[in-house]
Structures are given as structure tokens and as C-alpha cells.
Image 1 (cartoon, rainbow, N blue to C red):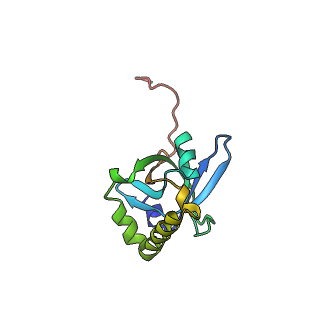
Image 2: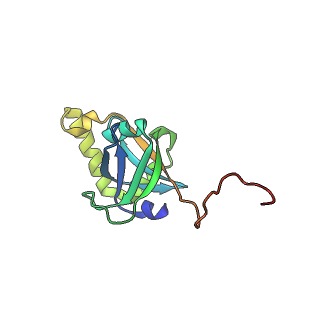
Image 3: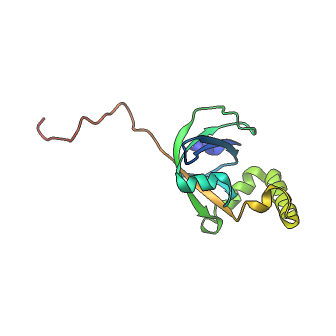
Length: 147
């Protein structure tokens, strides 16, 4: 999990209602035992996550080319106000790039032009990476004493 948190970009793959996967490169930070993505509340990925919280995460390039192994995760939509400690991690990691996006959002949102005015309020996607069981343990049915 911490490895993905160190990546500049992570591909988050969500599923449409018909099961079609949709991958999107996003900025990500790690905090405690979760990964966080900052996005608009009305974006397609958020709508898909509200329908199905299972996602796939993988390191990727700015354009979304996957560069490493993928891992399953569960995503939860969280208002920015509920996780104020996360925002400083984004500003520290993405600095000037993040400030540029914020400025463009304000200008284009004010002009009601471009993609930013339809994204809704900003939220975090809080993701918990699902870890596979350790070793090669497989259940053989119910546990029975004295077997």
C-alpha cells in the first residue's frame, strides 16, 4: 500500500453497471492505512464507485499506462471536510502542479467553461487495499477438533 502512495500517478479502475472496466490516472497520497484521491463529487469515477466500491489500483504514467502490478481495493467517498489532515499531503506532494489545477478550476469554473464547472464539490476517495491471505492457506471446510 505504501508503495502505491509513493507513486506520482496511480490508475484507478472502476466498473460500469454492465461490468465494463474504466481506468483513470489520478494523483494519490498515502495516509495511515489508506490511499486518497482528490476529485469532483460528480465525476464518472465517483458515480461508478457509489454503485460498486470495488476498484483496482496500479502504478501508472501521467497518461495512464500501467507500470506495475495491480491490487484490489475498496473505495469510499469522503467529504474533504471530514479528512482535513489529508490536504497538506496533497499540497506537499504535488505542489505547483496542484496549485495550477486549482487556479484553472477557479478561472474556468467562474467562466462556466471547460470540464471543471460540472465536477461538483471536491471530495476524497478513501481506498483500502485488500491484502491477499498470507502463504498458501486454504480452508478445508469447518474446523473440527480432534481431527
